[in-house]
Length: 144
Image 1 (spheres, helix red, strand yellow):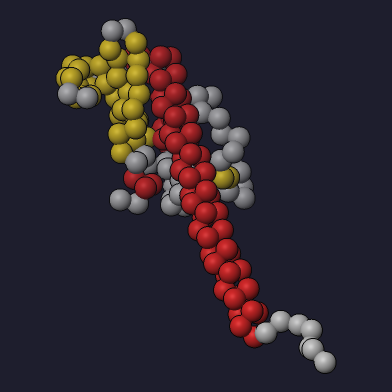
Image 2 (tube, rainbow, N blue to C red):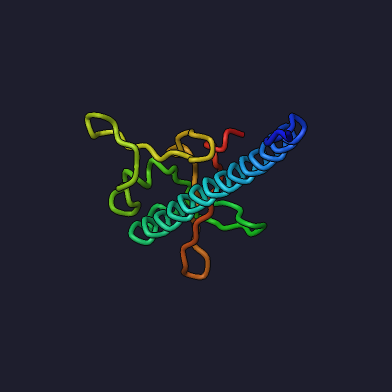
């Protein structure tokens, strides 16, 4: 009479193969998740830059500092703004997805990769050829 079933070696082989598949899957899922979080932060940065441009277009008198951007020096056509200043300035940045305190007064912009606040990140706004540009100057919320 022959027994039906699997041997211990066959069961261990299946378990090893399944463990390998699970390990590879988790590594891929984590990489996909990290890439998604980085894209979300890139989108927030682009939105802050656009909001800074809109703010500077409505308030050109703020462009009073001198600065260097990409190796070019600009006299009296620059300003450095924090994300907090842009958000508090009004309708330049969509605050619909910001974290708000229980009393509804404090809104925080969170870096999804690090979990740190982006409110102190700075954007440099400058005028060149009668156009206004913005570039993130210091992303303190990256933690480094």
